[in-house]
Length: 260
Length: 260
Image (cartoon, rainbow over all chains, first blue to last red; front, side):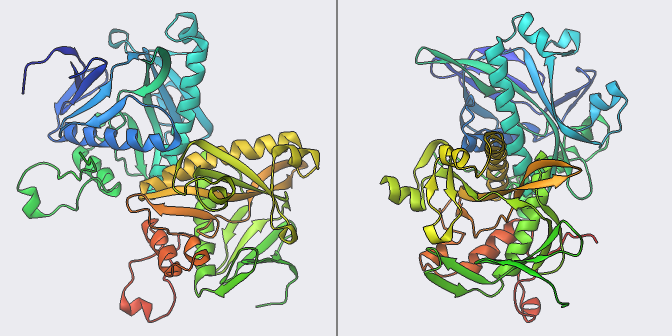
């Protein structure tokens, strides 16, 4: 691997400068963290799987015309994306009560919400990504009102789309987190979906059994984290049925639809 | 089967009065028609499959909170639905150019549209379900402006949801037709999704090969109509893998998720 400039290292990804101006390489690490880094582990194969998941979802979201930062997957652990200015707001959609929302509001986990709820968190590890309202987002200048409107509209469309996509493979999309960025192209600035979409930042429950197929298995010490991620990948057709011959090569066998 | 009152017989369905006031039984026929009845055939098993498809999609659409007329499937060919006053407008969503749109506008079939387009047809067989604009719909009183707004908003959400659902099983949702009705419950009138959703009124192409998996196989004499419908059902998990033992019973083997 040739020398390259590290721009940023986060909990689950490293960003390097890309080969051309305006591009970035996202490297997916195997690290898993929870509760703002208080819990940490290395899950072999997670990086490669999340790289593939994110490629898949970003490409599929193109079907509904929502713009993303994604360009192409480069290899097992890396993908090329457009360089954007990340808006420091995590956008969370909740279809079913779970996690911090259950705790914060004293609601029972698993309760279907009468309608989907969009929440915002201020992206700041030192502060523990605190919940904020749309008022904070616009008054503190993290996003302008039109930018926030765009983010919400795209988020609701992505929610409908992903709810359908997961329903088709027998999975309930309980909640998920998105990040957006400002992209300047041809002198025009617009908001695009950035970061990643993977079981690291979605809650995914089997639609029949409510079995958790996401990072909550790690957060809550339920075991079988990678088995759950692989189950999701298998249902999406991203992973060949396991067989011992292939497994001898170690790690998941990814099915690529990258034609180049 | 006990005597019951036929309310209406259409090309692919018969409607009977339901067991309770405000309910209707939809009976799915095996008849296939095209080009406003100029072409007709009987496809064994189509009715049962479309009954199951429509149950599946109407139930799944509940995940995004869009209201439908569906109550429950009663048996292989019949489902119980709420009695609604059908709005005489077919709402068509197009994601990719195909069929009448390609012909009417001289566009190449298969061209992805820059954004999804919603079209309206006036439901009138004698007139050949002519294309109309939103102006006709509201000016001629088929729907009020707020009703039409509701229909369009629900249609766009259903489009995002179904596009995701089909993408998850490797199918491109090219276009589809919806019908809506007025439902009065607790003294309040609202618009709900009615009629059916099945490969009879969707264009579904395999995402890799563009193979047609819908009623165009019948319209265009491509053969393998029921095989295509069964392929869609299989990918949705509605149909068990065929095996000779089960096939001896004739017709498709449907997997029911009807718990009652």
